[in-house]
Image 1 (tube, helix red, strand yellow):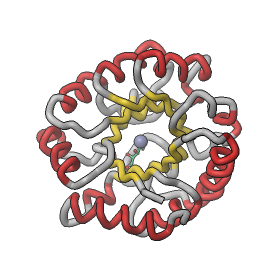
Image 2 (cartoon, rainbow, N blue to C red):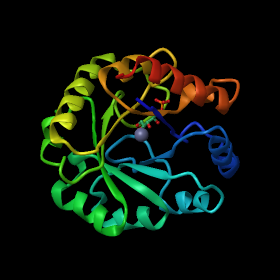
Image 3 (cartoon, helix red, strand yellow):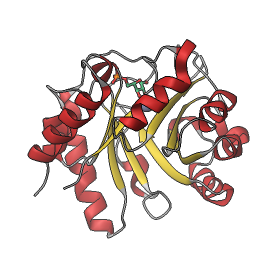
Image 4 (tube, rainbow, N blue to C red):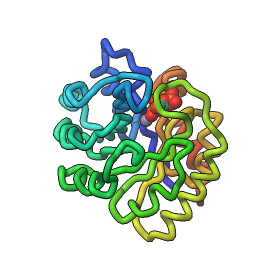
Length: 223
Ligand code: DX5
Ligand code: ZN
């Protein structure tokens, strides 16, 4: 199994955001994960499409936007225009999730569905014919640096079974507290895409971190 390592830039030095993104690209990261928070769905406020668009000008890596925002429907096209190839939304924030996934696709991006820890997998069940990524949150959304919720590995395994049964090529991503001590459990449960923020920034270099996390995930992942 080939593991994708997708850094969250939440821990980045925002006075040097472009350089940090270029460093992640040089380190061999697969995508960059932008955690967009509105202070309503989650008790934190980060950045919006304009910041992502600015970073788009200085790096070639694919971008994914993780929208932790109330009622994001009106703004969905802004993230595609900002240069995100994936736009990931929480069904809890949407009036009509099925319509929102289609709207993301119609805007030119690929839709992803993110499930908070207490949100049942059934909320993604009828989205599998519309989305290209299922994100199982392994922390409660809102902040980086939280502890990994290992109980979510059962949800990851159930999501893996659901995806395999669907016959569709859907990425299974985990996000939150993913680092050298936790990535193997998530990979063994069936995840193949791994968001890492604070743990990656703790390595001596991005290159060492991306390589070590990918090696640990591939060693533990499905054969
Ligand atoms: C949390 C975000 C995550 C988080 C990951 O709401 O969705 O992407 O920033 O950061 P770490 O790896 O530090 O948990
Ligand atoms: Zn995230």
